[in-house]
Length: 199
Image (cartoon, rainbow, N blue to C red; front, side):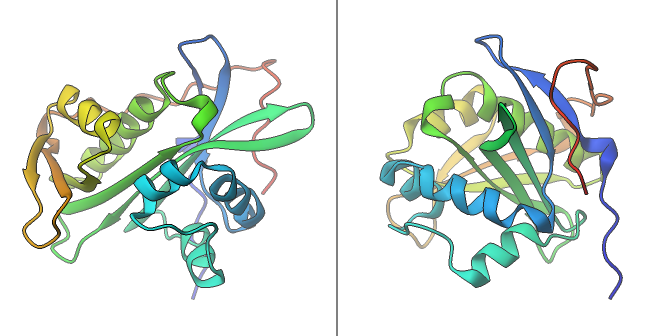
């Protein structure tokens, strides 16, 4: 099977509310160590909100699935901060296209120290814009009832919120993509010391 083409056109820089510039880019198979460090670094509460169970890290199967994507039916974006020469993943967002070919199921996580800076909103809006450009029609996600931050963000972005049909304590947030913001051309600021991934 041919290796999927890396979508460099989706690489961008984004300025957070606090003024710091971060790199947002599609994930790559070489990111396994980066992704595992991100998951391990989340607080137990943040990991529970993201995975709906008390994992401490991704097992090998999960880690491979998280980093080896086809960029079409499974797209994952990561946000990075560069601490000197080191890459630090601070956020991740992904969607999977369901069998109907029209609905995408999404998930988002942001490192605890980087929350409340607008990163989750940016990642979700960018995912929706990409999905809409690719003619997907609906975005859905499962959110734990106690995850009030994610529920508030979903409501702010005009998602509908319903109880899950078969999982108590879980809500389904969903939105029609017809009114999603169009995908902007990626912003890559030169001289900002945010290098492109060396793939």
